[in-house]
Length: 58
Image 1 (cartoon, helix red, strand yellow):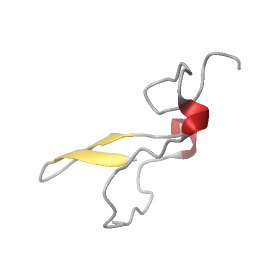
Image 2 (cartoon, one colour):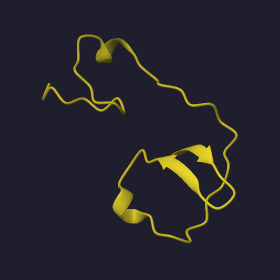
Image 3 (cartoon, helix red, strand yellow):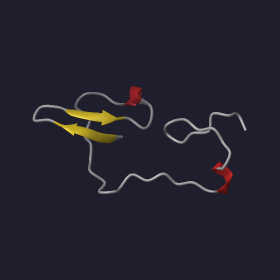
Image 4 (cartoon, helix red, strand yellow):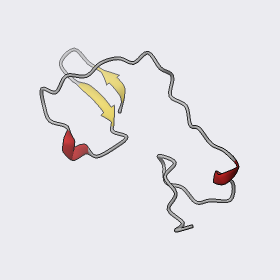
């Protein structure tokens, strides 16, 4: 996921996977990486969701 809101007693997060695997108290670590969206020729013309997953059945 990616943290968006850093408040004194809470953090807002966008989850990039299955949110059912996360629970309160889980330890998280900073990666220091910048979010990027890899793509290639195989993605051109495809329909994808907000996370870049193909949803057009091709």
